[in-house]
Image: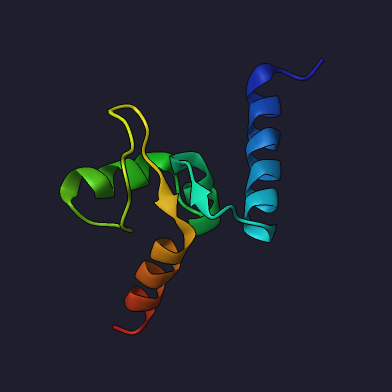
Length: 80
């Protein structure tokens, strides 16, 4: 029987493939991390430090990233 951590790892891989193939206009932290191929923890750290892609926070508990803002942030990083 496959353990839970292996299943979670496989699910994360599948989510990354799906998100990168068809990213939503408004992404959760996990979706944005999959789109950028980084960890959700790294995005959190960048937010905390005042860096990373622009985000919106419609409520105290929700953080969302607009795909256009993420793409613009990536483009700005590659032009440096």
